[in-house]
Image: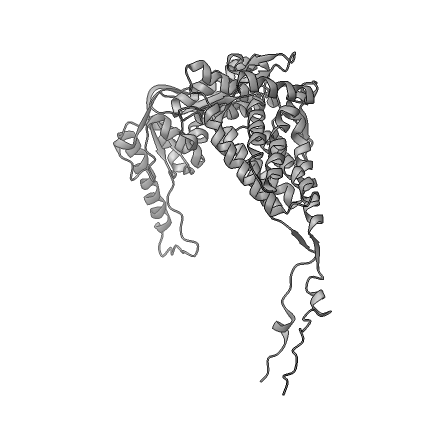
Length: 541
C-alpha cells in the first residue's frame, strides 16, 4: 500500500504577524540606506572643519552658552543625536580621541565615505559580506604599507612638527609655539608612552588674569581652595605636608545608635572624650612637624582652634584626583587617617601660598619632588582660556604617544593619497568581485586630500591628481601647499602626522563601517514590553 504523501505545513499564520505589531521595523536595503544617511549626516557636521583652513562651528547649549571651535571631537561631543547609527559613529570618534587624541574628524569622514561607497556597490549587485571582506583586505594592505612610509624622530624639532600639525588649526598662530612648548615639557616630565598618566599628572586650571600669552606650566599643584581659617598661615617655605584620605572628625554614631544619659555629666563626659580625640590627632600632626594638612573630608569645629594654635594650615574637601596629585607632586603617601600617619608618609614642598584672583582663592604648592605639573591658562576671556586648555590637551596627548622606532608619517593628506594609489594598484591582482570593494576603500581614503583642498578653496580634482602624480615620481613625502598649490617636501615643511593616529583612524573607520554593514534589520519598540499573556493565565491540570 502506498504511503500517504506528506505535504509541507505552512507554519506562518496571521497570529504570527502580530508578534512584532508594537515594533517599527526597517529591514534590508532600506535599513542600509537609513544607516548610511545617518553616518553621512554626522560626517557632514564636521567635514568643513578639516585642515588648517577648516571652518569654525558655533555650539550653543541649552543654557545659551556659546562655544566656537573647529575641533571635530568637541563638535561631536556636543551633538544631540537619536539615530543609533549616528551614535555608533560618534562613539567611534570618541574611541579615536581616547586612543590617539587626534584624527577624529578624519576617521569619521572616512567611515562615512566607506559606507557611501558600500551603498553604491550594493546597487551594482555586491553583497555586504563581499564588501566587508574587501574592506578587511584593504585594511590589511594599508597596515603593511605604512612602515615603508614612516620616518624615525631625528631631532627635537621633529616632535614640534608632529604637534604643530595636530593643533595648528585649533589655535591662533601666536599661541601655537607656546602651547607646543608646554606640551613637550609636560610629556618629558611624564615620560613618553605613559598615556594613562597624561590626565592625572597634569592639572589644568583657568585663572582670570593677565593675557593668553601669560599661560604657563609650573612644577607644582594649583587648585581653587582656601584655608580652613583665615588666621592660619597663608604662605610658607620648605613645608612638610600630610595628605589624609579622611578628616579630623570624631566617628559619627551608627544610624540606630542611642546615647543613654543616666546621670548628670554623662553628656559632658562624652563631649570631653571626643575633644580629647581631636586634640590627640592635632598633637600627632604637630609632633611630626606637619605644616600643611590636606584632607579629603571635613574638620570638626573643635579641631579648628587646635590647628591654629599649632601653626598648622588645613585645606579640606579635596576630591580623590587632586588628593593623588598633591601626593604625587610632594612625594607624600596618602594615609587613611591621622592615627595611621607615619613620618615616612609625609611629603614636602619648596613653597606654598594662597592668594585671591578675581574673587577666587587659589592654593599653589610648588615642588620638584614629583612628576606632576599644572597648566595655568591665563587671560580675560573664559572661552579663549578653555580653548587653550583643549588645545593643550590634544598637544600633550600626541606628545606622550610619540613612541616606536618610526612614528612619523606624511601629513597634509599625502599618506591617505599614497595608500589609495597602492590599493588601486594591488586591486588589479584580485580576480574576484572583492576588487570593487578594494577600489571603493581607496576612493574613501582619497576623500581626505579632496576635503583638504575643498576647505582651502582649491579645486579638489586638480589637487588630488597633482598629488598622485607627484608621489609616483618623487616619493610619498611630497605634498601640496594649501596656500598656493605648489608641490613641497612635507618633512621639510613640518607637516607630519603621528603614525599612531593614522593606524587607529584606519582601524576605527573600517571597523565602524563593517559594524554598520552587518546590520540588515532595525527595530524600534513603540511601547515598553509587557509580560506574556500566558504568565497571567491560571495553570490547571
